[in-house]
Length: 335
Image 1 (cartoon, rainbow, N blue to C red):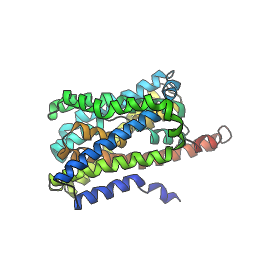
Image 2: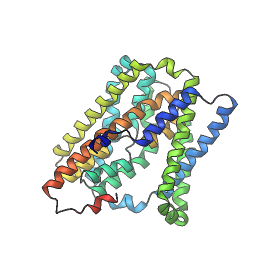
Image 3: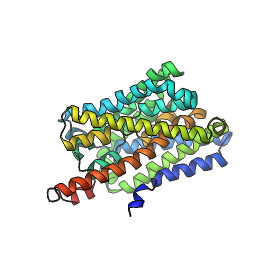
Image 4: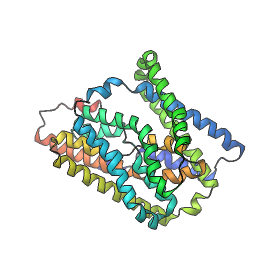
């Protein structure tokens, strides 16, 4: 069973299959135009359902631990982007301008929600605080990520903030707000059908990946990125993840957080959201460049899942041996 821990995430495998499909049979011409409309509708549906699912009580429940939350947000939206900006000359020298922009975009993304909470629970951390930090980070990312992209791309590329704000508002914020408004009528239904709605989310992401990589393939992405660049890019993502791991561990000790809160900081402050990143990239960047932009995020996502799964299990088992009677297993099975 231990070998199963290192299997790739099934959803990531689906994304890889979709990338291969787009590489072998991309959609182009008039078909690409209609497929673009389909993906825009899928993104709107995705954020509408996120608005309907997000409970305001979840966000309010952990706000009292403001020091922890501010530290998580600082790691996500300040330290991570600063690392990317400082390392961007190295990135550019090793993998070129296009993938450097992708790495900078990765650094600007919010934290994950589901996996941050799940890994915190598995490691016996502060689950309530993880729910608040991860959910709030995801919401803030819709506003903060475009601003961070503007600041970093102002040096490394062209970025029209005004157009981006309008696109984010129309395609992401308006559906999200409508979902929040409709929650009073469909909230119970959404909770009862969470598993089915997760498949809707995943399907929306796969549509966007196929459309994005189709445009990238037509634009010649595989002439720009060879196996050597992919290997180096994977190494850079792993190094970036290791640095953020070290920083979050140091901050947890330096700021005097309890062990459970330090685990929450570690798992929420070191992660980046593929689910939020792909729709945002589709909104913020030209279709032909989206595939190159999201490639680092796709690699980083799998690396963070593998590393966090291993560490969460190890910490959870270690603490479980120390105080096996102080926590009930059922408390973690439902996270």
